[in-house]
Length: 106
Image 1 (cartoon, rainbow, N blue to C red):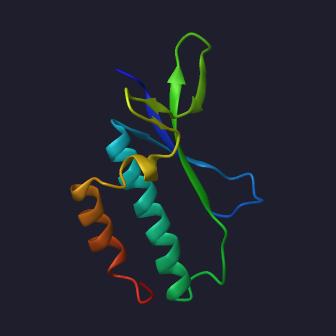
Image 2: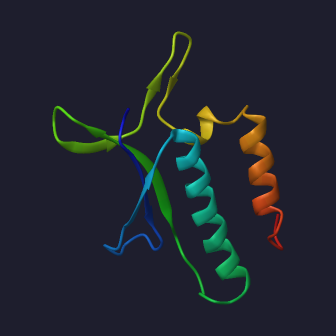
């Protein structure tokens, strides 16, 4: 099993990065979406005045002993973006709809 983690920078330009271990790409997608929604929630509720965030999914390369960006190759496709990979996943889309549906700006 691959070791996975989400990285999240709540304000691009600062060196502060949060790392969240996850069990799967699906869990990683959900964590990234939760963090993004939380940043938007804080903006909408005037908790922070502005932000420019970034997130991604990484996998640990056991041979190189370092974290690398997540990619997935299938017979028919190549994915280096978790959002694209889950674009057609009804379960994830329903999760996102419920999560982001709480925001004032939809």
